[in-house]
Length: 579
Image (tube, rainbow, N blue to C red; front, side):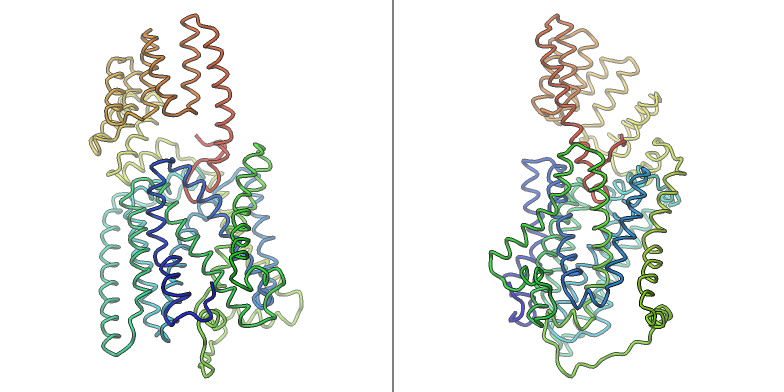
Protein backbone atom coordinates (compact mmCIF):
# COMPACT_ATOMS: atom_id res chain seq x y z
CA UNK A 1 0.00 0.00 0.00
CA UNK A 2 2.53 2.57 -1.13
CA UNK A 3 1.84 6.00 -2.53
CA UNK A 4 5.34 6.68 -3.83
CA UNK A 5 4.41 5.53 -7.33
CA UNK A 6 0.73 6.51 -7.21
CA UNK A 7 -0.73 7.79 -10.48
CA UNK A 8 -1.14 11.53 -10.67
CA UNK A 9 -4.27 12.69 -8.86
CA UNK A 10 -4.58 9.66 -6.57
CA UNK A 11 -3.22 9.10 -3.08
CA UNK A 12 -2.69 5.37 -3.69
CA UNK A 13 -4.35 4.49 -7.00
CA UNK A 14 -7.84 4.71 -8.48
CA UNK A 15 -9.10 1.40 -7.06
CA UNK A 16 -7.60 1.81 -3.57
CA UNK A 17 -8.72 5.42 -3.24
CA UNK A 18 -12.23 4.43 -4.31
CA UNK A 19 -12.29 1.82 -1.54
CA UNK A 20 -10.46 3.48 1.37
CA UNK A 21 -11.29 7.15 0.88
CA UNK A 22 -13.99 8.05 -1.65
CA UNK A 23 -16.25 5.04 -1.23
CA UNK A 24 -15.77 4.43 2.49
CA UNK A 25 -18.60 6.74 3.71
CA UNK A 26 -21.15 4.97 1.51
CA UNK A 27 -19.72 1.53 2.33
CA UNK A 28 -19.96 2.29 6.05
CA UNK A 29 -23.55 3.46 5.58
CA UNK A 30 -24.54 0.29 3.72
CA UNK A 31 -22.70 -2.04 6.11
CA UNK A 32 -24.14 -0.60 9.33
CA UNK A 33 -27.65 -0.21 7.97
CA UNK A 34 -27.46 -3.92 7.12
CA UNK A 35 -26.07 -4.72 10.57
CA UNK A 36 -28.93 -2.80 12.20
CA UNK A 37 -31.29 -5.55 11.01
CA UNK A 38 -29.56 -7.97 13.37
CA UNK A 39 -28.03 -5.86 16.17
CA UNK A 40 -29.23 -2.91 18.22
CA UNK A 41 -27.91 0.56 17.42
CA UNK A 42 -26.26 0.64 20.81
CA UNK A 43 -24.39 -2.63 20.24
CA UNK A 44 -23.22 -1.45 16.81
CA UNK A 45 -22.10 1.90 18.20
CA UNK A 46 -20.32 0.24 21.12
CA UNK A 47 -18.36 -2.01 18.76
CA UNK A 48 -17.43 0.82 16.38
CA UNK A 49 -16.57 3.27 19.12
CA UNK A 50 -14.64 0.87 21.33
CA UNK A 51 -12.52 -0.78 18.66
CA UNK A 52 -12.34 1.81 15.88
CA UNK A 53 -12.88 5.25 17.43
CA UNK A 54 -10.62 4.64 20.43
CA UNK A 55 -8.28 2.57 18.28
CA UNK A 56 -7.84 5.35 15.74
CA UNK A 57 -6.18 7.53 18.37
CA UNK A 58 -3.18 5.20 18.19
CA UNK A 59 -1.88 5.74 14.62
CA UNK A 60 -1.52 9.50 15.11
CA UNK A 61 0.28 8.92 18.41
CA UNK A 62 2.54 6.43 16.62
CA UNK A 63 3.49 9.20 14.25
CA UNK A 64 3.92 11.84 16.98
CA UNK A 65 6.23 9.70 19.08
CA UNK A 66 7.75 7.54 16.34
CA UNK A 67 8.65 10.01 13.58
CA UNK A 68 11.98 11.45 14.77
CA UNK A 69 11.88 14.66 12.74
CA UNK A 70 8.35 15.49 13.92
CA UNK A 71 9.11 14.66 17.56
CA UNK A 72 12.25 16.80 17.56
CA UNK A 73 10.30 19.75 16.13
CA UNK A 74 7.59 19.60 18.82
CA UNK A 75 9.49 17.82 21.59
CA UNK A 76 8.40 20.06 24.47
CA UNK A 77 4.78 20.01 23.30
CA UNK A 78 4.68 16.22 22.98
CA UNK A 79 6.18 15.79 26.45
CA UNK A 80 4.16 18.41 28.33
CA UNK A 81 0.73 17.99 26.70
CA UNK A 82 -0.10 14.49 28.02
CA UNK A 83 1.04 15.46 31.52
CA UNK A 84 -1.19 18.55 31.66
CA UNK A 85 -4.16 16.83 30.02
CA UNK A 86 -4.10 13.72 32.20
CA UNK A 87 -3.78 15.87 35.34
CA UNK A 88 -6.79 18.04 34.40
CA UNK A 89 -8.96 15.16 33.18
CA UNK A 90 -8.03 13.03 36.20
CA UNK A 91 -8.92 15.82 38.61
CA UNK A 92 -12.25 16.28 36.85
CA UNK A 93 -13.15 12.57 36.82
CA UNK A 94 -12.27 11.92 40.46
CA UNK A 95 -14.24 14.99 41.54
CA UNK A 96 -17.30 13.72 39.66
CA UNK A 97 -17.32 16.37 36.94
CA UNK A 98 -17.60 15.01 33.40
CA UNK A 99 -18.28 18.23 31.56
CA UNK A 100 -15.14 17.78 29.48
CA UNK A 101 -17.17 15.26 27.47
CA UNK A 102 -19.01 18.26 25.99
CA UNK A 103 -15.71 19.74 24.82
CA UNK A 104 -14.75 16.36 23.35
CA UNK A 105 -18.09 16.11 21.53
CA UNK A 106 -17.62 19.48 19.85
CA UNK A 107 -13.98 18.80 19.03
CA UNK A 108 -14.83 15.36 17.67
CA UNK A 109 -17.29 16.81 15.17
CA UNK A 110 -14.86 19.54 14.12
CA UNK A 111 -12.11 16.93 13.77
CA UNK A 112 -14.28 14.90 11.40
CA UNK A 113 -15.03 17.96 9.28
CA UNK A 114 -11.39 18.97 9.07
CA UNK A 115 -10.25 15.48 8.08
CA UNK A 116 -12.56 15.71 5.09
CA UNK A 117 -11.17 19.16 4.26
CA UNK A 118 -7.67 17.67 4.49
CA UNK A 119 -8.55 15.01 1.92
CA UNK A 120 -9.83 17.72 -0.42
CA UNK A 121 -6.54 19.58 -0.12
CA UNK A 122 -4.42 16.44 -0.62
CA UNK A 123 -6.26 15.63 -3.85
CA UNK A 124 -5.81 19.22 -5.00
CA UNK A 125 -2.07 19.09 -4.30
CA UNK A 126 -1.77 15.72 -6.02
CA UNK A 127 -3.23 17.16 -9.23
CA UNK A 128 -1.64 20.62 -9.45
CA UNK A 129 -0.38 23.53 -7.40
CA UNK A 130 -3.57 24.91 -5.86
CA UNK A 131 -4.46 28.56 -5.52
CA UNK A 132 -5.21 30.16 -2.19
CA UNK A 133 -8.77 30.81 -3.41
CA UNK A 134 -9.42 27.11 -4.07
CA UNK A 135 -8.28 26.27 -0.55
CA UNK A 136 -10.58 28.86 0.97
CA UNK A 137 -13.52 27.66 -1.10
CA UNK A 138 -12.90 24.05 -0.07
CA UNK A 139 -12.91 25.13 3.57
CA UNK A 140 -16.05 27.24 3.20
CA UNK A 141 -17.89 24.47 1.35
CA UNK A 142 -16.99 21.92 4.02
CA UNK A 143 -17.86 24.10 7.00
CA UNK A 144 -21.10 25.49 5.55
CA UNK A 145 -22.63 22.12 4.60
CA UNK A 146 -21.51 20.31 7.74
CA UNK A 147 -22.81 23.19 9.87
CA UNK A 148 -26.15 23.00 8.09
CA UNK A 149 -26.38 19.25 8.63
CA UNK A 150 -25.70 19.64 12.36
CA UNK A 151 -28.12 22.56 12.80
CA UNK A 152 -30.81 20.90 10.66
CA UNK A 153 -30.59 17.58 12.51
CA UNK A 154 -33.10 17.73 15.37
CA UNK A 155 -31.93 14.33 16.61
CA UNK A 156 -28.30 15.43 16.92
CA UNK A 157 -29.33 18.68 18.63
CA UNK A 158 -31.52 16.83 21.11
CA UNK A 159 -28.77 14.32 21.82
CA UNK A 160 -26.19 17.07 22.36
CA UNK A 161 -28.46 19.19 24.55
CA UNK A 162 -29.28 16.15 26.68
CA UNK A 163 -25.56 15.70 27.23
CA UNK A 164 -25.24 19.35 28.23
CA UNK A 165 -27.94 18.82 30.85
CA UNK A 166 -26.42 15.54 32.02
CA UNK A 167 -22.98 17.10 32.53
CA UNK A 168 -24.21 20.34 34.06
CA UNK A 169 -23.60 22.79 31.22
CA UNK A 170 -26.50 25.22 31.25
CA UNK A 171 -25.22 27.92 28.89
CA UNK A 172 -27.09 26.24 26.03
CA UNK A 173 -30.31 27.58 27.55
CA UNK A 174 -29.24 31.07 26.49
CA UNK A 175 -30.16 30.12 22.91
CA UNK A 176 -33.68 31.21 22.11
CA UNK A 177 -35.44 28.15 20.61
CA UNK A 178 -37.64 30.43 18.52
CA UNK A 179 -34.61 31.48 16.47
CA UNK A 180 -33.55 27.96 15.49
CA UNK A 181 -35.73 27.66 12.40
CA UNK A 182 -34.48 31.02 11.11
CA UNK A 183 -30.91 29.90 11.77
CA UNK A 184 -31.45 26.71 9.78
CA UNK A 185 -32.79 28.66 6.82
CA UNK A 186 -29.96 31.18 6.84
CA UNK A 187 -27.29 28.46 7.11
CA UNK A 188 -28.91 26.60 4.19
CA UNK A 189 -29.00 29.76 2.09
CA UNK A 190 -25.34 30.41 2.92
CA UNK A 191 -24.35 26.81 2.04
CA UNK A 192 -26.18 27.02 -1.30
CA UNK A 193 -24.61 30.41 -2.07
CA UNK A 194 -21.12 29.07 -1.34
CA UNK A 195 -21.86 26.04 -3.52
CA UNK A 196 -22.83 28.31 -6.40
CA UNK A 197 -19.60 30.27 -6.02
CA UNK A 198 -17.70 26.99 -5.78
CA UNK A 199 -19.21 25.68 -9.03
CA UNK A 200 -18.54 29.01 -10.75
CA UNK A 201 -14.91 28.76 -9.71
CA UNK A 202 -14.72 25.22 -11.14
CA UNK A 203 -16.14 26.40 -14.47
CA UNK A 204 -13.77 29.36 -14.56
CA UNK A 205 -10.77 27.12 -13.75
CA UNK A 206 -11.80 24.67 -16.47
CA UNK A 207 -12.03 27.48 -19.04
CA UNK A 208 -8.53 28.51 -18.02
CA UNK A 209 -7.35 24.94 -18.83
CA UNK A 210 -6.82 24.03 -15.16
CA UNK A 211 -7.71 20.41 -14.36
CA UNK A 212 -10.87 19.67 -12.39
CA UNK A 213 -9.95 17.56 -9.38
CA UNK A 214 -12.61 14.88 -9.72
CA UNK A 215 -11.50 12.76 -6.71
CA UNK A 216 -12.01 15.83 -4.50
CA UNK A 217 -15.51 16.31 -5.92
CA UNK A 218 -16.28 12.61 -5.52
CA UNK A 219 -15.18 12.36 -1.88
CA UNK A 220 -17.18 15.49 -1.05
CA UNK A 221 -20.29 14.00 -2.66
CA UNK A 222 -20.04 10.66 -0.83
CA UNK A 223 -19.20 12.27 2.50
CA UNK A 224 -21.89 14.96 2.43
CA UNK A 225 -24.49 12.45 1.25
CA UNK A 226 -23.61 9.95 3.98
CA UNK A 227 -23.53 12.51 6.79
CA UNK A 228 -26.81 14.03 5.59
CA UNK A 229 -28.47 10.61 5.64
CA UNK A 230 -26.94 9.64 8.99
CA UNK A 231 -27.95 12.81 10.82
CA UNK A 232 -31.09 14.08 9.09
CA UNK A 233 -32.83 11.24 7.24
CA UNK A 234 -31.99 8.56 9.82
CA UNK A 235 -33.80 9.24 13.10
CA UNK A 236 -31.38 7.08 15.12
CA UNK A 237 -28.52 9.39 16.16
CA UNK A 238 -26.55 6.57 17.80
CA UNK A 239 -26.48 4.53 14.60
CA UNK A 240 -25.86 7.71 12.59
CA UNK A 241 -22.80 8.52 14.63
CA UNK A 242 -21.50 4.96 14.30
CA UNK A 243 -21.80 5.22 10.49
CA UNK A 244 -19.80 8.44 10.24
CA UNK A 245 -17.30 7.31 12.86
CA UNK A 246 -16.57 4.05 11.03
CA UNK A 247 -15.93 5.88 7.74
CA UNK A 248 -13.76 8.50 9.44
CA UNK A 249 -11.70 5.94 11.33
CA UNK A 250 -10.95 3.67 8.37
CA UNK A 251 -10.01 6.67 6.24
CA UNK A 252 -7.69 7.78 9.03
CA UNK A 253 -6.05 4.35 9.34
CA UNK A 254 -5.33 4.35 5.63
CA UNK A 255 -3.99 7.90 5.37
CA UNK A 256 -1.67 7.46 8.36
CA UNK A 257 -0.29 4.28 6.82
CA UNK A 258 0.32 6.01 3.50
CA UNK A 259 1.91 9.04 5.08
CA UNK A 260 4.21 7.16 7.43
CA UNK A 261 5.23 4.86 4.60
CA UNK A 262 6.13 8.01 2.65
CA UNK A 263 8.18 9.31 5.59
CA UNK A 264 10.35 6.22 5.57
CA UNK A 265 10.67 6.27 1.79
CA UNK A 266 11.97 9.83 2.01
CA UNK A 267 14.62 9.25 4.65
CA UNK A 268 16.21 6.36 6.52
CA UNK A 269 16.79 8.48 9.64
CA UNK A 270 13.24 9.75 10.33
CA UNK A 271 11.72 6.75 12.07
CA UNK A 272 12.52 4.86 15.26
CA UNK A 273 13.02 1.12 14.89
CA UNK A 274 9.47 0.17 15.94
CA UNK A 275 8.00 2.92 13.76
CA UNK A 276 10.08 1.60 10.86
CA UNK A 277 8.96 -1.97 11.51
CA UNK A 278 5.31 -0.94 11.25
CA UNK A 279 5.51 1.28 8.18
CA UNK A 280 8.65 0.39 6.21
CA UNK A 281 6.92 -2.01 3.83
CA UNK A 282 3.44 -2.83 2.67
CA UNK A 283 3.38 -6.57 3.14
CA UNK A 284 0.13 -8.02 4.44
CA UNK A 285 1.86 -9.37 7.55
CA UNK A 286 2.84 -5.87 8.64
CA UNK A 287 -0.55 -4.38 7.80
CA UNK A 288 -2.20 -7.09 9.87
CA UNK A 289 0.08 -6.32 12.82
CA UNK A 290 -0.69 -2.59 12.46
CA UNK A 291 -4.43 -3.25 12.54
CA UNK A 292 -4.04 -5.71 15.41
CA UNK A 293 -2.33 -3.02 17.50
CA UNK A 294 -5.16 -0.58 16.73
CA UNK A 295 -7.87 -3.06 17.71
CA UNK A 296 -5.95 -4.07 20.84
CA UNK A 297 -5.72 -0.46 21.96
CA UNK A 298 -9.38 0.09 21.15
CA UNK A 299 -10.20 -2.96 23.26
CA UNK A 300 -8.66 -1.46 26.40
CA UNK A 301 -12.02 0.04 27.31
CA UNK A 302 -13.78 -3.29 26.80
CA UNK A 303 -11.25 -5.13 28.95
CA UNK A 304 -11.59 -2.53 31.72
CA UNK A 305 -15.36 -2.87 31.58
CA UNK A 306 -15.03 -6.62 32.02
CA UNK A 307 -13.34 -6.13 35.42
CA UNK A 308 -16.59 -4.61 36.77
CA UNK A 309 -14.37 -2.36 38.89
CA UNK A 310 -15.28 1.31 38.75
CA UNK A 311 -11.84 2.49 39.91
CA UNK A 312 -10.14 0.63 37.06
CA UNK A 313 -12.78 1.85 34.66
CA UNK A 314 -12.31 5.47 35.78
CA UNK A 315 -8.58 5.14 35.21
CA UNK A 316 -9.17 3.80 31.71
CA UNK A 317 -11.73 6.54 31.12
CA UNK A 318 -9.04 9.09 31.98
CA UNK A 319 -6.63 7.35 29.62
CA UNK A 320 -9.12 7.31 26.74
CA UNK A 321 -10.22 10.92 27.25
CA UNK A 322 -6.58 12.02 27.44
CA UNK A 323 -5.63 10.26 24.22
CA UNK A 324 -8.74 11.69 22.55
CA UNK A 325 -7.70 15.22 23.50
CA UNK A 326 -4.16 14.48 22.32
CA UNK A 327 -5.44 13.02 19.06
CA UNK A 328 -7.61 16.02 18.21
CA UNK A 329 -4.97 18.52 19.31
CA UNK A 330 -1.99 16.86 17.62
CA UNK A 331 -3.81 16.31 14.36
CA UNK A 332 -4.59 20.03 14.23
CA UNK A 333 -0.93 20.90 13.65
CA UNK A 334 0.62 17.65 12.41
CA UNK A 335 -1.46 17.34 9.22
CA UNK A 336 -1.50 20.81 7.70
CA UNK A 337 -1.18 20.18 3.95
CA UNK A 338 0.31 23.61 3.36
CA UNK A 339 3.45 22.46 5.17
CA UNK A 340 6.14 21.24 2.79
CA UNK A 341 7.05 18.22 4.93
CA UNK A 342 3.44 17.04 4.76
CA UNK A 343 3.08 17.52 1.00
CA UNK A 344 6.30 15.83 0.08
CA UNK A 345 5.17 12.55 1.63
CA UNK A 346 2.08 12.53 -0.58
CA UNK A 347 3.43 14.06 -3.77
CA UNK A 348 6.85 14.81 -5.18
CA UNK A 349 7.78 18.47 -4.62
CA UNK A 350 9.63 20.40 -7.29
CA UNK A 351 13.12 21.54 -6.39
CA UNK A 352 12.50 25.17 -7.29
CA UNK A 353 9.49 25.57 -5.01
CA UNK A 354 9.19 29.11 -3.77
CA UNK A 355 9.62 29.43 -0.02
CA UNK A 356 7.15 31.86 1.52
CA UNK A 357 8.50 33.64 4.57
CA UNK A 358 5.81 34.43 7.11
CA UNK A 359 6.47 37.18 9.61
CA UNK A 360 6.66 35.76 13.12
CA UNK A 361 3.92 36.85 15.51
CA UNK A 362 4.46 37.94 19.08
CA UNK A 363 3.97 34.41 20.39
CA UNK A 364 6.59 33.03 18.02
CA UNK A 365 8.99 35.87 18.83
CA UNK A 366 8.55 35.11 22.54
CA UNK A 367 9.34 31.46 21.86
CA UNK A 368 12.46 32.35 19.85
CA UNK A 369 13.66 34.68 22.61
CA UNK A 370 12.96 32.13 25.31
CA UNK A 371 14.79 29.35 23.49
CA UNK A 372 18.00 30.92 24.77
CA UNK A 373 17.19 29.13 28.04
CA UNK A 374 17.01 25.36 27.66
CA UNK A 375 14.09 24.97 30.05
CA UNK A 376 11.95 27.75 28.57
CA UNK A 377 10.15 25.60 25.95
CA UNK A 378 8.85 23.32 28.71
CA UNK A 379 7.70 26.20 30.91
CA UNK A 380 6.15 27.89 27.88
CA UNK A 381 4.30 24.72 26.83
CA UNK A 382 3.07 24.09 30.37
CA UNK A 383 1.42 27.50 30.49
CA UNK A 384 0.02 27.18 26.98
CA UNK A 385 -1.40 23.69 27.54
CA UNK A 386 -3.01 24.80 30.79
CA UNK A 387 -4.76 27.58 28.85
CA UNK A 388 -5.76 25.16 26.09
CA UNK A 389 -7.02 22.37 28.32
CA UNK A 390 -6.98 23.32 32.00
CA UNK A 391 -9.14 26.43 31.77
CA UNK A 392 -11.92 24.82 29.66
CA UNK A 393 -11.97 21.66 31.80
CA UNK A 394 -12.07 23.61 35.08
CA UNK A 395 -14.71 25.95 33.65
CA UNK A 396 -16.91 22.99 32.70
CA UNK A 397 -16.37 21.51 36.17
CA UNK A 398 -17.49 24.84 37.67
CA UNK A 399 -20.63 24.96 35.52
CA UNK A 400 -21.42 21.41 36.64
CA UNK A 401 -21.00 22.33 40.31
CA UNK A 402 -23.26 25.37 39.96
CA UNK A 403 -25.84 23.90 37.56
CA UNK A 404 -29.39 24.23 38.84
CA UNK A 405 -31.72 23.52 35.90
CA UNK A 406 -34.22 20.77 36.72
CA UNK A 407 -34.84 17.83 34.42
CA UNK A 408 -38.32 19.10 33.63
CA UNK A 409 -37.00 22.58 32.79
CA UNK A 410 -34.39 21.02 30.47
CA UNK A 411 -36.95 18.84 28.72
CA UNK A 412 -39.38 21.73 28.36
CA UNK A 413 -36.57 23.67 26.68
CA UNK A 414 -35.90 20.77 24.29
CA UNK A 415 -39.59 20.56 23.43
CA UNK A 416 -39.48 24.23 22.43
CA UNK A 417 -36.17 23.82 20.59
CA UNK A 418 -37.26 20.86 18.46
CA UNK A 419 -41.09 20.80 18.46
CA UNK A 420 -41.05 18.62 15.33
CA UNK A 421 -39.55 15.65 17.21
CA UNK A 422 -42.06 13.35 18.88
CA UNK A 423 -39.48 11.92 21.26
CA UNK A 424 -38.84 15.20 23.09
CA UNK A 425 -42.54 15.63 23.89
CA UNK A 426 -42.75 12.00 24.96
CA UNK A 427 -39.67 12.36 27.19
CA UNK A 428 -41.18 15.47 28.74
CA UNK A 429 -44.36 13.51 29.46
CA UNK A 430 -42.34 10.80 31.21
CA UNK A 431 -40.66 13.46 33.36
CA UNK A 432 -44.04 14.96 34.27
CA UNK A 433 -45.36 11.51 35.26
CA UNK A 434 -42.39 10.97 37.57
CA UNK A 435 -43.16 14.29 39.25
CA UNK A 436 -46.85 13.43 39.57
CA UNK A 437 -47.95 16.13 37.11
CA UNK A 438 -50.30 13.79 35.30
CA UNK A 439 -52.40 16.32 33.38
CA UNK A 440 -49.25 17.81 31.86
CA UNK A 441 -47.86 14.32 31.23
CA UNK A 442 -50.96 13.24 29.31
CA UNK A 443 -50.91 16.47 27.29
CA UNK A 444 -47.22 15.99 26.38
CA UNK A 445 -47.72 12.39 25.26
CA UNK A 446 -50.69 13.45 23.14
CA UNK A 447 -48.53 16.22 21.67
CA UNK A 448 -45.92 13.59 20.73
CA UNK A 449 -48.62 11.55 18.98
CA UNK A 450 -49.88 14.65 17.19
CA UNK A 451 -46.37 15.09 15.79
CA UNK A 452 -46.02 11.40 14.89
CA UNK A 453 -49.02 9.14 15.34
CA UNK A 454 -46.83 6.12 14.56
CA UNK A 455 -44.49 6.73 17.52
CA UNK A 456 -45.31 3.62 19.56
CA UNK A 457 -43.40 4.48 22.79
CA UNK A 458 -45.64 7.52 23.32
CA UNK A 459 -48.72 5.27 23.49
CA UNK A 460 -47.30 3.03 26.21
CA UNK A 461 -45.98 6.05 28.16
CA UNK A 462 -49.43 7.61 27.88
CA UNK A 463 -50.76 4.34 29.22
CA UNK A 464 -48.48 4.65 32.25
CA UNK A 465 -49.78 8.17 32.93
CA UNK A 466 -53.37 6.90 32.72
CA UNK A 467 -52.48 4.02 35.03
CA UNK A 468 -50.99 6.33 37.67
CA UNK A 469 -54.16 8.41 37.38
CA UNK A 470 -56.17 5.26 38.16
CA UNK A 471 -57.58 4.79 34.65
CA UNK A 472 -56.41 1.23 34.07
CA UNK A 473 -58.74 0.31 31.21
CA UNK A 474 -57.57 3.37 29.28
CA UNK A 475 -54.00 2.40 30.14
CA UNK A 476 -54.52 -1.09 28.71
CA UNK A 477 -55.97 0.42 25.55
CA UNK A 478 -52.88 2.60 25.07
CA UNK A 479 -50.46 -0.30 25.62
CA UNK A 480 -52.38 -2.37 23.09
CA UNK A 481 -52.22 0.50 20.62
CA UNK A 482 -48.45 0.65 21.08
CA UNK A 483 -48.19 -3.08 20.37
CA UNK A 484 -50.42 -2.75 17.32
CA UNK A 485 -47.78 -0.38 15.91
CA UNK A 486 -44.73 -2.24 17.21
CA UNK A 487 -45.27 -5.81 18.37
CA UNK A 488 -41.59 -6.02 19.40
CA UNK A 489 -41.78 -3.16 21.90
CA UNK A 490 -40.82 -5.10 25.00
CA UNK A 491 -41.68 -2.36 27.48
CA UNK A 492 -45.22 -2.17 26.10
CA UNK A 493 -45.71 -5.90 26.81
CA UNK A 494 -44.27 -5.36 30.29
CA UNK A 495 -46.49 -2.35 30.98
CA UNK A 496 -49.52 -4.27 29.75
CA UNK A 497 -48.58 -7.09 32.10
CA UNK A 498 -48.38 -4.66 35.02
CA UNK A 499 -51.93 -3.51 34.35
CA UNK A 500 -53.23 -7.09 34.20
CA UNK A 501 -51.34 -7.91 37.42
CA UNK A 502 -52.88 -4.94 39.21
CA UNK A 503 -56.33 -6.06 38.03
CA UNK A 504 -55.67 -9.63 39.24
CA UNK A 505 -55.62 -11.15 35.74
CA UNK A 506 -52.55 -13.22 36.49
CA UNK A 507 -52.60 -15.52 33.47
CA UNK A 508 -52.68 -12.55 31.09
CA UNK A 509 -50.04 -10.77 33.17
CA UNK A 510 -47.71 -13.77 33.03
CA UNK A 511 -48.23 -14.10 29.27
CA UNK A 512 -47.38 -10.41 28.78
CA UNK A 513 -44.24 -10.59 30.96
CA UNK A 514 -43.07 -13.73 29.15
CA UNK A 515 -43.57 -11.98 25.81
CA UNK A 516 -41.43 -9.07 27.03
CA UNK A 517 -38.67 -11.52 27.97
CA UNK A 518 -38.96 -13.33 24.65
CA UNK A 519 -38.21 -10.02 22.93
CA UNK A 520 -35.58 -8.82 25.42
CA UNK A 521 -34.00 -11.63 27.38
CA UNK A 522 -32.19 -9.09 29.61
CA UNK A 523 -35.37 -7.36 30.77
CA UNK A 524 -34.77 -7.53 34.54
CA UNK A 525 -38.07 -5.95 35.58
CA UNK A 526 -40.02 -8.54 33.60
CA UNK A 527 -38.24 -11.41 35.40
CA UNK A 528 -38.95 -9.78 38.76
CA UNK A 529 -42.60 -9.23 37.79
CA UNK A 530 -42.90 -12.90 36.79
CA UNK A 531 -41.47 -13.90 40.16
CA UNK A 532 -44.14 -11.84 41.92
CA UNK A 533 -46.90 -13.15 39.69
CA UNK A 534 -45.98 -16.80 40.29
CA UNK A 535 -45.59 -16.16 44.03
CA UNK A 536 -49.08 -14.70 44.04
CA UNK A 537 -50.28 -17.91 42.38
CA UNK A 538 -48.57 -19.91 45.13
CA UNK A 539 -45.93 -21.37 42.80
CA UNK A 540 -42.84 -20.91 44.92
CA UNK A 541 -40.45 -22.91 42.73
CA UNK A 542 -41.18 -20.89 39.61
CA UNK A 543 -41.15 -17.66 41.64
CA UNK A 544 -37.68 -18.39 43.07
CA UNK A 545 -36.32 -19.35 39.65
CA UNK A 546 -37.40 -16.04 38.12
CA UNK A 547 -36.14 -14.12 41.16
CA UNK A 548 -32.69 -15.63 40.69
CA UNK A 549 -32.83 -14.83 36.99
CA UNK A 550 -33.72 -11.22 37.86
CA UNK A 551 -30.65 -11.00 40.10
CA UNK A 552 -28.42 -12.41 37.37
CA UNK A 553 -29.80 -9.92 34.87
CA UNK A 554 -29.19 -7.13 37.39
CA UNK A 555 -25.50 -8.07 37.41
CA UNK A 556 -25.49 -8.03 33.63
CA UNK A 557 -27.14 -4.61 33.71
CA UNK A 558 -24.27 -3.38 35.88
CA UNK A 559 -21.81 -4.38 33.16
CA UNK A 560 -23.99 -2.71 30.53
CA UNK A 561 -24.00 0.44 32.64
CA UNK A 562 -20.24 0.49 32.27
CA UNK A 563 -20.64 -0.11 28.55
CA UNK A 564 -22.83 2.94 28.21
CA UNK A 565 -20.01 5.20 29.34
CA UNK A 566 -17.69 3.94 26.63
CA UNK A 567 -17.83 7.09 24.52
CA UNK A 568 -20.35 9.49 26.07
CA UNK A 569 -18.98 12.49 24.17
CA UNK A 570 -19.81 10.68 20.93
CA UNK A 571 -23.15 9.02 21.60
CA UNK A 572 -24.51 10.80 24.62
CA UNK A 573 -25.05 7.47 26.38
CA UNK A 574 -25.23 7.77 30.17
CA UNK A 575 -22.54 7.10 32.70
CA UNK A 576 -22.73 5.81 36.27
CA UNK A 577 -25.12 7.84 38.34
CA UNK A 578 -27.21 9.01 35.39
CA UNK A 579 -30.87 8.14 35.06
